[in-house]
Image (cartoon, rainbow, N blue to C red):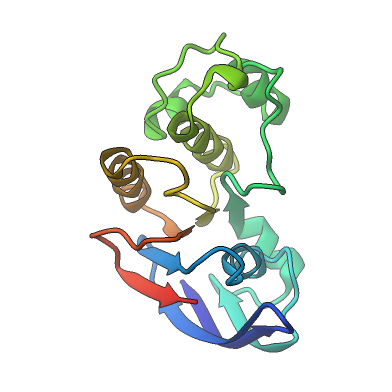
Length: 184
């Protein structure tokens, strides 16, 4: 569960409040520059708010929040190395079997596929697979709708809503289905 009350990062976003229960999909929608990425990073314990309170699955300190929250693809933060393969990305993070994680993320690319050959949707799916390797309680994903036609956006929203974890994901245009909406 996430409980945010009056979260503010000076000059980026102000007074954001919402509650997200376990297994829910919260959508953060707003135009470029509205603070979506910074809000996601704050919710995942990577940025400290100037004001407000945050509890993520009972944790209030950023270091503890980072242990229960994983970043899927967040542009500029978790960028994929375009010269590595899908398998190399997964093995770099964890030596244990990962095929089940690829299945959960709906990634249909061959493990030997270079990231540079993946379209945006499959890059997001790889980011989700990488986040799932940490077995987090919360997953955050940025710019889910970036550069994708509506049917591919909907496929990603369906994936994120069906992960069985608390998911917070950002976009410009809100999808048809979500449990909570935070507009910036």
